[in-house]
Image (cartoon, rainbow, N blue to C red; front, top):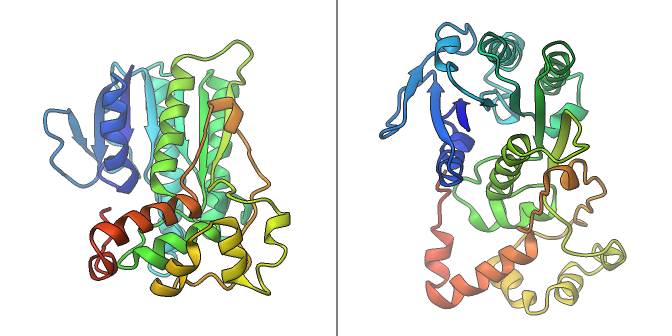
Length: 291
C-alpha cells in the first residue's frame, strides 16, 4: 500500500518508517518539522491547520496518524494546544482521507481515553469518535491503537525503563509491532473483521495473579520465585520493585490484529543479565534512551 505517515519525525514515526518500508509499503511522510527522510517523499505542513495535507495524501491507500500532545506535555501545553493538535489535527487527516477516497486509517490513541475528562484523555476520546464518525459516514475502516505509559525513559534504563514494565509501562517496540500489525490487518482483512477495531498496546503479563500475592511482603523473594536468578540483579542495580506489579486484565483487540507483545519485566531481566556479563555495570548505568 501507499501510506501517508503523519507526525513522521516523532518517536513512533521514526521507529515505524523502516518497519513499514520493510513490509513493502510505499511511504509518504509529513510533519511540521523538516527532517532528513532520505529518498522518501516528504511534505512539511502543520496538521493543526491542514494546508497541504490533501495534496500529501494524493494516491495513498491508507493514513497512519500519529501527531498528538501527550501526558508528558501536560504542564507546558494548554487545553487549546491539546485541542488544536489532537482534535483538529485528526479531523484534518480524515478530511484529507475523504478528499482522496482513502478508506484505511490507523489512529494513535492512548489509554488516557479512560481519563476522558482531562485535557489529554478528552481529546483522545474525541479522536476515537472521529474514527467512528468517518466509519459510519464515509466508509473508513480504522484501527485505533491505545498504548499505555509510552514515554522515552531518559537516562535511567534500569528504573526508567526496566521496572516501569512492572507498573504499566509498555515497550516502544511492542507499540510499533501493534501498529504494523494493525496496518497489515487493514491491508488484508479477514472475513468477518469489524470495520472499526480498538487495540490496547500494553505490556503483557509475565506472571499469574496468584504469584503476586506475596509480592508486597517480600518483593525480592517473590521476584526471585517468578524470575529465577533475579535477586542478584535486583540488589546489584537497585531495581525499585517494592510495589506490587500491575496485572493485565484487558486484552482489547489483541486477537483482531494478532498482537502478541512479549517485552515484559522478565525479558528486561534477561537482557540485563546479558549486558551485565558483556559490558559491565558502569556501561549499563551509562545507557541513555535512543529515542
